[in-house]
Length: 277
Figure (cartoon, rainbow, N blue to C red):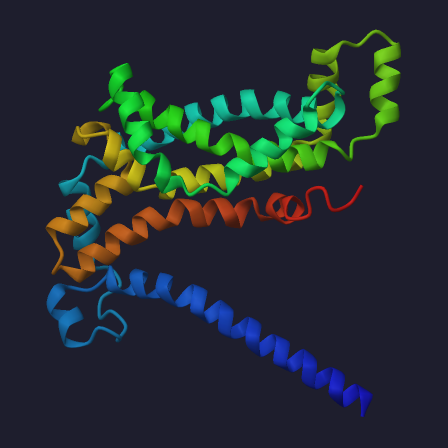
């Protein structure tokens, strides 16, 4: 009876996981199959498989409508700059909050946590006015600075939780040997926290890749846009051409999916940051 109950529970869990997997994969398959259809074929049978898997006119139309290489370089460049700025601030701040003792340390950490619960929409007008006063509207630096700034609180929160688990004996031994703060950070803390650093980088990169509001709001020139924002404008122009829309959505979705597939081991480790000392 006990074995039957255990098998039944396991079967139920597997069914639930299978349903979740289907719910996650189905939209991707729908976009993929639709991108190989003509408009007439989609209108006739939207749920059927494409008749010709080699039909690439939708992809060709996307590349002819947009300067995909420029958009891709823009997006990657903005993301790399924002990631560099975010890590330059987040890693030292996290190590300082985790391992150094100074007045109001706990208060600073609580303020960082509190900033995470403030809705991001409340900052849109202040951010735009600030960038306008600095003359950075329609300048890629506005997107880079905002991406980096908004990612720092979450990154500091996760990395601080991880670095608190670093062995204090090792840091004390290096301090006795004459290592200063910089040496401890670079030679001890960063190598031992690499899984957490990679994890927050993955989360930030995918969030920035999928960000639509910030580039649309601060970048008005087409050749400065990110690929996600440019594809969104294409969707508005070709609202009735569903195969072309699905093609654009597929092209915007593939890079984050590949990141998660190839770096999933770091993501799994990052999910337990700070849970195990």
